[in-house]
View 1: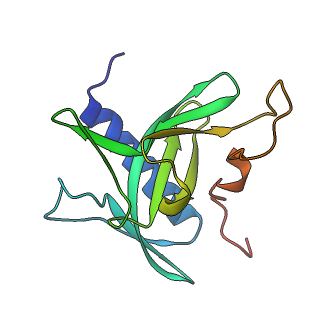
View 2 (view 1 turned 135 degrees about the vertical axis):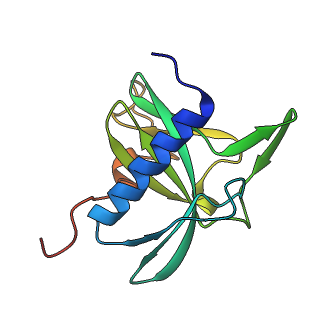
Length: 138
């Protein structure tokens, strides 16, 4: 079934919020700022973190995602406005948290398996950003 971009985004935000709660983090949602650059805020032992949530697609051995908005034919990244890009993969039902300063400016990917040419330099491994949805001590 085709979904509107808003429905895809809402599903991703709900999945990220649920995964963060399962990981033992407190989650706060903006009440009056639905059009804000910040989709949610979460709190952990390091403090508060502003998150922009993005849905992704699995393409071969990578999870592909956008790391910017595209409004009125203008790309705009999130540096300086959020702390993390929270990527939800519907195909894998997993969440990945990428610090905004480690995210590409427009679009990028997280590698699930080694590349066929065995390139390892500069590879952004999905496992390094996977949110463990089980709280420590459980």
